[in-house]
Amino acid sequence: MFLLYIKKQTEEICLEVVKRNGRALQFVKEQTEQICLEAVKQNGFALLYVKEQTKEICFKAVEQHGDAFGHVKKPFVHVIY
Image (tube, rainbow, N blue to C red; front, top):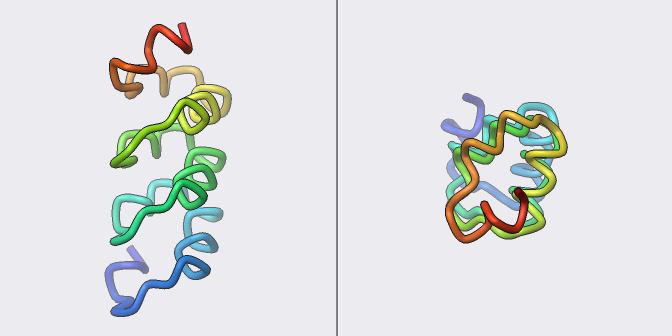
């Protein structure tokens, strides 16, 4: 992916990349909640690459694609289900 070749990843660059391809989140060195939210909005399955899930990120991922529920970590499963 494109982010592999960026030595100095900025939040702005990462946001633009994940807005176009959510699965690029796996190559983001410093994840922020905003970057993760944008990634799962574009592709719910990007939840697989979120290092620190929040309730909001999980909701957005499942909202984007219901099957992303399979990647929700335990503390949030009961909240979403």
